[in-house]
Amino acid sequence: MQPLMLPDPHPTNMGQFETEDINLTHLNTSIKRHMQRRNFIKHTALCAVAVSASGFVRFNGTSFEGDCETTTDILGPFYRPDAPIRTNLRINKAVGQPIVLSGQIKHKNCVTPLMNACVELWHCDGTGVYDNDSPEFKYRAKTFCDDKGNYSFNTILPVPYEVGGGVVRPAHFHLLYSAEGYQALITQLYFTGDKYLSKDPSAAAPGAKNRILAIREKNGEKAVLFNVTMMDKIPAAIAAIDQLAGTYVNDKDEVKERVFYRRDNLLWEKNTASINGGYPLLYNGNNQFEKYGNAQTAYLFKPNPDGSIQLNFTISRQGKPAIDWEGIKSKGGN
Image (cartoon, rainbow, N blue to C red; front, side, top):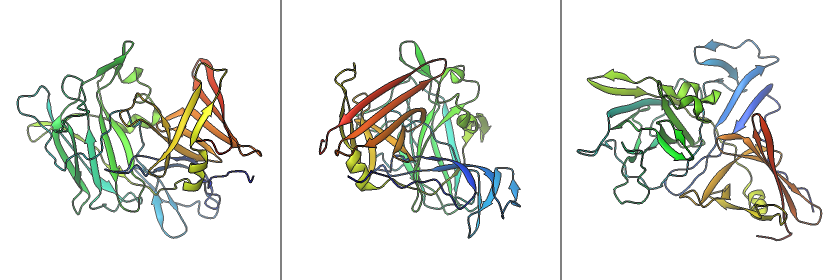
């Protein structure tokens, strides 16, 4: 059996970059996506590049591109597809501080407005509860950018809520951005002054710094502004995902099995705690994945000569021993 190798997303002819390939949820019926976040390290013949307020600018062989990519965040378990098209999410007499969320979406050059991009928003209500099943899709909506890339929602400010064991998530918006020719982007927005930010792994991550927003007054009401830059997608091969999908077994561990499946051309891990039935995995090249929004997780798939595939799963924990799990999917197993 030939070793199973997914396409390596890391470019080798454009200097050296640190790359994250993010596979995200696609709008309505699909979850297809990816955003590249590259930190410029060096460029040989093209080292004389312009620098803007948003970061470095690099030459891709054809044109200049900015290094102003929008960072991503965890998907969370409460995404619902098929949200209604609307910009007003407010509910008469409902608890909550009214707020306006607006911004502009740009092409990967960080300058050109991106028209007709789809923006999807979801968040909890004023008591910390998500609407996961009602036909009203409360505090869930999508809209499309105008010809200048602008979008806006009238909604309420979400509140922090407990997720169990005394752990409290800070207030946050969930957003999904999608546009033709780009990998869809899922992220979360937080708010300055929230006392739970420092204890939340997602909000406290370095990549979230520019997504902690100041709440300002605009036209007599609260408002936050969030601009987005879209990036190209580099998906894993569908055939390879199909080979990796299946049940991996470890009879000697407390966790007896881990189940993976292909959904909308992405590799997902089954998890009944999510209303989607699981979570998408981010492809990092060389048969390695991580859980989207959690770089402390690592999934390494190793095809064996006998046709079986070995999975090495690791969770790195700061100041604590790593959690390791190994499992095998038999040849032809599913």
